Length: 458
Image (tube, rainbow, N blue to C red; front, top):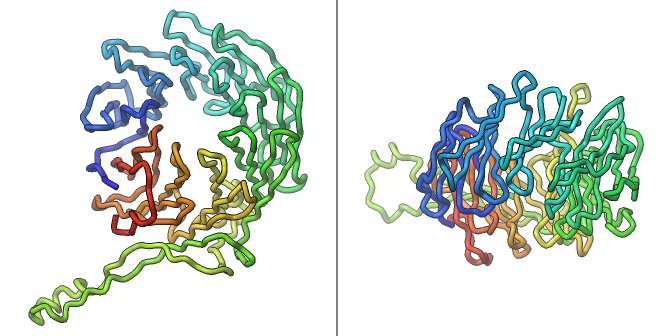
């Protein structure tokens, strides 16, 4: 792997959808860099500090959210002289996002008073009253033709279906939730999943015309759903809950066909490979070097204290570090808080928040545990390669950690004082965006990786 130098960062940064650019927020400025040369191709100045940025799907436009104003500023990469500013006055703007056609901006006002669709083609705008949330509760179909927007009125949750062509409401239906948490279209656009707040375990599947196809409730007492994710193929729906279980539903009957437990002690029989991060000391043989006694005494760390990070394959049974959450505090750190599918929908990784140093990788084809990665530090982020079965994670250290079905590897970041706190793939899987607190860098990743190519020194 090859790493770029570190660049200044003072806010969000992300790849463009076409992978050609990287947008970086540096206080009031929006810096657009080319992903090949890393030269600055555009520089835009905003009216206040940038809180969040979002690319349009066609990568021609980008918007900046300025929460302190609050307002939105949008810019064009192909027409640098073109500018757009959206200010809703006293109503404020809590969050904004692009429509799939990249020519409309959806903004939600403060206190969820209304959601407004702004057109970049003319001065027309459409209002949806009473959106449930600011930054969530909105989902688009994969073909970009329809939007599902969650609203609430008279203590009841509703779903509004809008056409993204004319931005007219096609239908409204009530949903059987106490306090709707979020919504997401299926990858084939044939179903909508809705789940309730953590206070009640309830997952609802609706058709686009408002018919309830299924209602799933694993248990009644205790905290419920924490995370939900469709598989890319659309055949599986994964539900992670506070009881430290991962349940997978099929798209034909909407019944569970797999339940995976996250136990603090893993016992046999188990075919999963357990990779544990360890520090291997580097022993330097200096017996044949002609060094003075004064040099050795003043540089005792020359032969001591140097380590190489690597994975050690551990046999089961193994006990994983477990943190019992306090019972008197809200939002307990337990349950499946991190979950994502591989590109081919065969594997899904999970993190039980009460065991934050362990990443579980499940094989859906064989309905079994494929691997466990046990880190020294809590896992900050994990992401699948968008083109192949390859998983990368970070823990806030200076190392990257990779897993493929052939093994797991540690990769050292050569940049000094650079601790990786977050990471993102570009769309073609050739480059990784690595973030530190005040800087970022990129790492080019070979398209095909074999286990023989990797060691902790790469």
